[in-house]
Length: 151
Image (cartoon, rainbow, N blue to C red; front, side, top):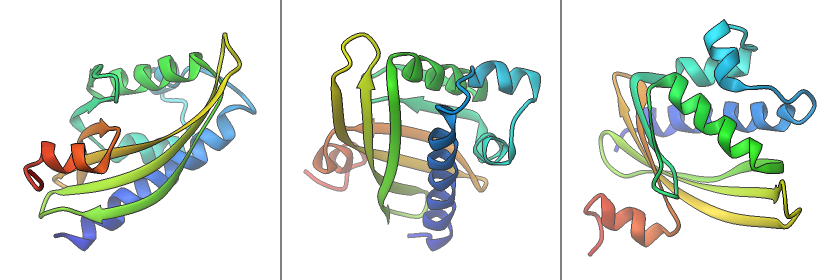
């Protein structure tokens, strides 16, 4: 296990949390901000923390490849919500390159207005000091099974 990767991922998710907490004050497209290079310090930290070959598979199985595509994925998520926030509950080192995060995600649906909270278990792979993969699951067991750490 790499304590350095645990800290790197924890810092990265801290920046994501700060970005999302401010988002509702001035909603805008993250993808457009990335393409125009109009990012604040935390947004820059999130973007710079991603490997150029970043691949994010969200809990619905939708895959986003590359930094701009990941920003578009965040845009799609936020467009579906009246409110959305995350809180990092736990970061656990799995092996040399992989970390498990447990994130509490809260949202209120844009069309329904219905609130919901879900725990997301994300297996994060660090390569060259950058986040290269993020695969979301709905349970710890499912995440650990996916990486061969549980039968």
